[in-house]
Length: 275
Ligand code: PAF
Image (cartoon, rainbow, N blue to C red; front, side, top):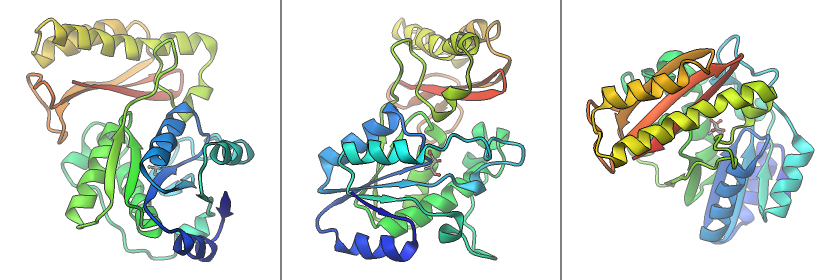
């Protein structure tokens, strides 16, 4: 595995790769969720590129940029064992310059739910993903469905800017107790982790209701709130949207996402169910 830290090194090694390229952009602190993306990229492409870059522009003032888990050596070993060909670990100065041209999140879809709670987050996320996709010139790029709004906005960016990369959305990976994997789970104490399970429990309940024929979003969301409110410290939102992130009054099977965002302690967690 080749590790590059500068743009020049990366570009040179990228040019040396022959055949199809699968790309997995990450912010490091790699877990089974990232590994599932890397494995899929490995299966579907001749070469796999991973980037590890904690992108400052997608963190809001007061968020966890400084304490975001950084585990460079462990991440490097994980990538090596997973058969990654090229690992890009740039510093901030290798990605950003002064007085940059910025792309922004769309004004409707980019500013509801996560976008409303974290205004500016998606601008920074799209900015870095655009850069990384252009740098990697990948055939396929892999993103988890846990960050559903992120995935849908990246798909839109690729469409709107006539980019040729194929965006692949991958299933959410959960611990055996149901907690969706996230680099931020390390912040949870044992007691908080137990309460955090209410997110996946609420989504499971939503899934059961849909299976039993309940399609009214209001009823599904009320049942979720009944599970979440006694457990979480702040329920930020529960919502039902379609796969273009438009709010839905009724579930449309095959075209709906049920979403939840909540704080347990000071840790912000998101989870969702695609139905
Ligand atoms: O999902 C993430 O880890 C980040 O938002 C991403 C896509 C790597 C961009 O920084």
